Length: 322
Image 1: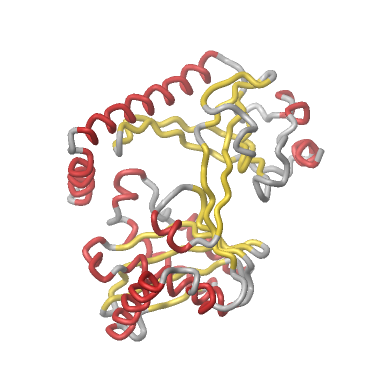
Image 2 (image 1 turned 90 degrees about the horizontal axis):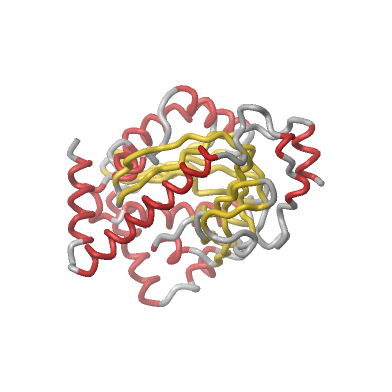
């Protein structure tokens, strides 16, 4: 009943979610939708969460389309579109949540890697630090957030994630104020890596309780030979072990090689959405699934004929030249 009471007392703040119609790495359309966000701390908290009887359509504000459900059990709703009670349910896919348990010492954590991997990692970090002894910076105070934000945004603008997915660090004074507010409450850690005093990689992390989350990251591809992303992540984890404040370093949802490489644990879960019934919502969701299917089919065909990787590189290069 906790979520029902929150809704009745208007505690939950609506969020705008953007559904992207992606053809490969090209966004061909978008649909902005306002939801009330609900989340479990862990996908293992309750296999039956949420209880639909506790989420009546009548409890929604007029400008809200439905509920965003974070970290449901993987088998709570079927993948794709379905009808759940009075709701249209959209459950896109299963997700993986990678994280590092910040228990013990950093050296003990490194021992979890193979000897060869550990040696290569330490060598890359040592070379970078020897060239740039003051190249690793940590920003935690409200008055330093403007400097970090400016440097991080300059990097983020040049990443392919920003070009292709509009997933870079948000710009503008509004987001800077959000960062400053997090810093005011001791919930902000901005990490910056410099090569010859030039910012080349950043990570924006926010803490809550005993967990800290890897929110937005980026590095300049021109410096890829220095492994800036790997070096920065190594130094971040080393800092967090030494800080002795958090128990978990959360990489956020989604799979990536660096997450698998650095994580100590993984949890499977699914995000879902409950939307008001209506033809318009159904058609837009159906089109979302159709575009994703077509994109996957094209990707498989290109992969079979050996062109997928080269085309992805060409697309990223072309967008980076704009």
